[in-house]
Length: 277
Image (cartoon, rainbow, N blue to C red; front, top):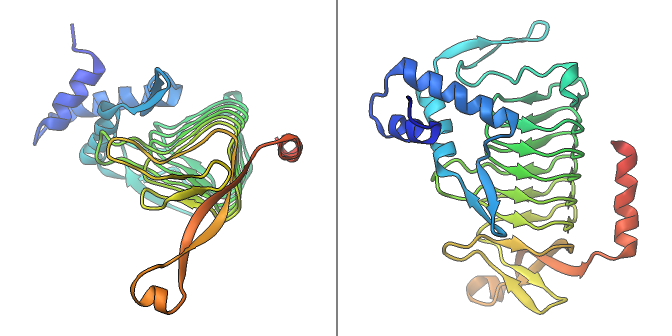
């Protein structure tokens, strides 16, 4: 009896020269499980999001053992990528609405029925996008990012990927979140359910978030990601530089600011998004 998939992938990933056939078979099994949503790069356990490091090591193994090959093309365009990571073979029966115009979903990404994707957009390996979510034009969903139900990721927004280190938590966007256009969520940030990120909000590990409602400042700490609270409404802001030439010149740097928490008016505006789906 063969060992469980996590054990096999860990052993193959740890090998300097893993057997090619065995490694490719394990990678194919992992990608199929990821695409089916039965395996995820991160999961919520006892209220806390945790990375599945073996999954991310398996994805990295796919890049190691893959060979460059010609990919399916449309018209005169030709593509060349690792043959272990082809495009997902979606059909009409998949229930995902993909509008023509240059959108692609990599194998090993889970995209639930009922998701709408406007062109162009890219969903990378290991990502999880749950039902009712809308990915607008020029959206990137990075490797292993986890996106919940009924999320709206507006045009030009980026949900960053986190593959390495393998134990690092990927970006998590929980249910019913609105991500404004031109914004970005990076470096394992968690956006809790129902939050609203205004256009241009950028969340990174190095950026403190000022909550003027609760009088708190949220930061990433060792072993703890940056978290945006449930139903928080976040807009771009600035904070003064207090030392050196920055202070002398009167400069400020970008910082997200929580200005309120969702109320009936915010929910009514969010309800308009359902018409697009």
